[in-house]
Length: 129
Image 1 (tube, rainbow, N blue to C red):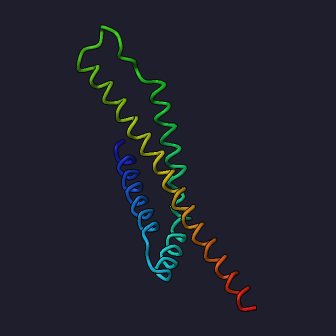
Image 2: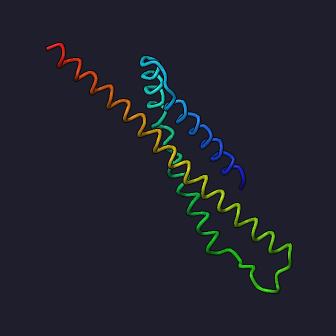
């Protein structure tokens, strides 16, 4: 069960690296090539959104059907196990939300760069006339 969370953690780390790479100042030619390369990668990496949504639904379902350990009949070990599972579920939910949010941020950054490039081309054409 931990494999999907490890994969999602690596995806979030890669998305964070790409977002940092996109937002770092760099020469115009290099920036346009980076944006075009990442724009090509964005389409296949869209899988992260439904994958994260499915994992969030799984967390919700498990939370709704989890045995509650709040009474006096629970031992200390059971209470610790229950709290540990709650913390893991919260961590995994943050991971899913951050994966979707980072994907959206990368998409918007690439879209803004492409819009700026097209506006610069239009401005160049107007100046030439």
